[in-house]
Image (tube, rainbow, N blue to C red):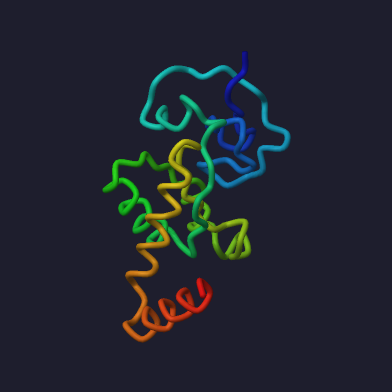
Length: 141
């Protein structure tokens, strides 16, 4: 049974749920379905590719890696999809479609979103945190 899409532009294989080639960023709409050729450095995301869920869309590759590092530190496996697309900015328009996506296993989504929220909260200024806490307490009342 085919479990990957082979890009017609560069020949690299991507998981079935990817819309764009992980390597060159081209559309996989007309890609050929092929069977996996075995283990390689990307096999972790291919094992259960259909159970990976986007938990964060980063502005750039650095931001995606910061989030991925926080998740990996908590023991969550992470895959960054579309990282290579940032190199194509100028050829491709910057924006939502070229932003790196941080993906985690479906079973880790809740924990990952909590860690991301805590991480983003940690980057807030003291005034922003105090205001956020006040708003949360007001909402609870």
